[in-house]
Image 1 (spheres, rainbow over the protein chains, first blue to last red):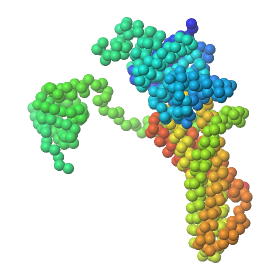
Image 2: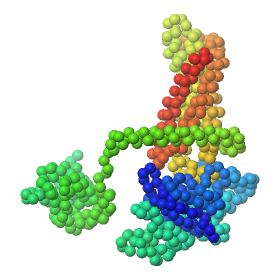
Image 3: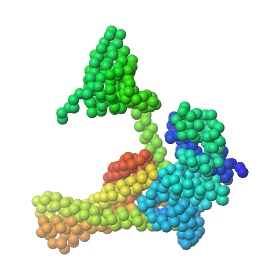
Image 4: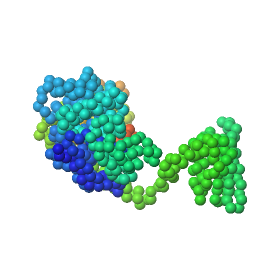
Length: 246
Length: 373
């Protein structure tokens, strides 16, 4: 399989400040690719650049079959789940999930309702179709956000800390869902997460960012990095130790 | 308030080559004001270098230690700490294990030139953002005209209800009181000349041409403009606007156009209601204070008013609606930060809108005068 996303010498920053300097990596089609790193190293910012919500200072991002990341009017080429879920507060969960279907397909109302129910069932929210976001918990909002990201069955999915704040059972169910989407539908998934159990379980490859290095300090399979990396920062992260104690 | 008994003591010893400050007893946050005062007094008289001897210090909490370290760092060279043991050593270790950056002094203030430069650059950025916003709104308006089905009309109706029907009572009340007050104030003057009946002319003209549209726009700016800004600001900081982008929906078309449409439809209607209730306010004063009959008052109002007087007010209200909605949405969409940012955006939206409304009203007054209407 070829590359789903190719990032070439990307420099991210604002004004004189450089957050990441000339980073390059590839995400292969069918990967469950995790962006790792400590707080403030720019994981979510990198994700926003991959989605096309922000422009880099220099360098390129190439998405297979699309070119540069593209957002704007038109059916979205990929699904995105934001850290908080980012559900629209004035809409019910069903309306949130059905928004893209109503906007970009010719399906009639019954068909949209059926698809929406199915997507909500997929994330364990069947029966909550008519609830407003304010009426559900933070974890449920995240799951509804995932259902919305899955609405158009995109082959590329971006998730920002999907399992943070979820109870252990919901987190495991979410991992199973992402694995199932990946294995059965070939969905390439790019996610930012700190959850090591989840990373070991679902990630095929990862990159690890570091604030001080302004870039990538490790890349590869997370289990292999845990077992073989000699970099103290990488080892400390994967073994949950303070640097130097490992 | 009575001070607690002193649980510590400070003793300074100068030996020619420097000063040793012996701390004894227990120091905690409750002792801080007195402790810092005494410490500063001792250090002011100390010769350098200075050593803080903690050998006889039995207990110190983190706040008191932070103050001690802070005072020690202000010396040149910074004071050395020695002799800590037991619990005091543990607290000291806790501090020393933290990254040194966290104990550094905060950076000093910026120079004047740098501040001027930053403000100028900020204004330039703001100007560019406003131009981009105007361009996006024009593009969204064009796209709405080409494809009206793309507008969330349900939202338009919802916003019309909130801005119009829900705002009606306060608009009615304020315009009624304005008509009443204006009639009362003018009656006092006009009565002196036996020109009581002209109160109806004055109230009718001023309410329909100026105060009806302006006060209604101000009320709508305070209610709906602030609400638009807060709503869009919250959506921006909670990534809902980004989510719209990623769903392929243009936020200008999806969020700004419905609000502009709603206000453009509602504000002229509210203005007409305000005109009517303003005249009723004047009528109450005219009948109650000046002993005019309702028929005479209304007849005089009808004779004083030309259709253009009402039309010009309604025309202005359309421009006011654009100003209120566009400014509020721009401030909302440019919100940065969290709840604090939303508050700033809302305040800025209301202040900017009020200024713009008054400025627009002045422009209209001059234009109408120049064209003799």
